[in-house]
Image 1 (cartoon, one colour):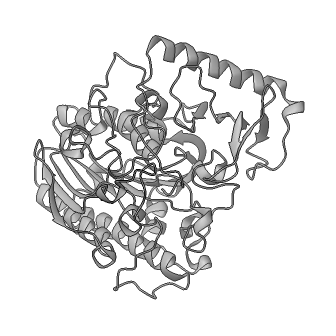
Image 2: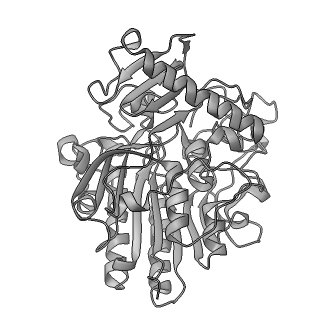
Image 3: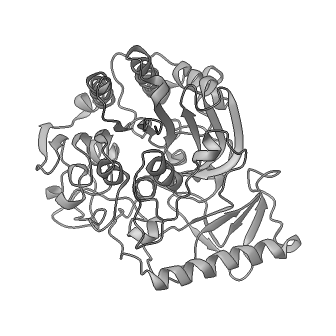
Length: 457
């Protein structure tokens, strides 16, 4: 008899710094203890070379589809009123698992579009409760491409829907109601766990927090709890919900049949400091430097994933799609390239090495097959064809000779060794040519994402 398929829970922070949590060197040291994440790391697998995309929407698209964001037209963050979103032609992780017999629920931030066809309840989730955009789109009015009718492009508030229904606005979002969104979403997730605990049907919960995105709208219960200001208070609040989710699994006795992952959608927003996370690396959100794309990631599955294991092997957000599809017995599409890799054997300790040797990042709205990537990670090397020092630019192009860094010995990407390693450049160019050929055979979806001129994500 085959082993029962595990319940699957994905928890995702927003703009969290690599070093925010205690288990990554922060926590108490930075004035905001994170006991929930620290315990999760002690009981699970901590990855130190896990990669996201460069900003919110691309990462969520990559995770949901297992495909490079440029393939699915989601290389930039979607904005309220932009009439954009993930194409219904894409197959999401929720759809794969639903077709495999899972119950599916999402509580939190979507950020993959606000048109009906792209909303969670039409993308494989049985139920959705949360918000559609990034936190500052609610707290700061944003012009959409300098449209003179920008005041009409108001974001929806806190919304909910069952599969196939239209969204219902549960409450408008203002500075007061924004402060308790994560609390409400976490409560719903925990209630869902308890409701499903005795079911023979496995479940998939996606719990993407609005913390730790700027601006840090404090939950009154957590105000002043840290010595790192509102950001630290929000970090501690989010950490408490991580602990409560794991506690709920233990209390219901299903922890040994539930795999949980915690990660972030990208690195911190440097230009919002001190209302931002901390990373020891160069760059932040919107850049392909390590500070923008190297994020915390912890896997937890008692009895299946070795407790206290730490690995520097390369893994990325796209791999979550392929790995969880495999663990859940799902069938991934065979009519399109899937860039994610099934890392089940690596996670379960059957093998010590990740199956990922390289990773590529695209930045910008271009969708042509020959679009030059911003950067490539190949083994221990990082190759930058073009670079952005911050989310707002400027862009630097390296032309025919890209910048090359040895991430293992130079994780801050400060010493360009391009002249010393021609073979690394050749490898990156080969990867680029392979992707061009793939994208010509399977054309990319034109951009369905939109970003403001100021780039506030």
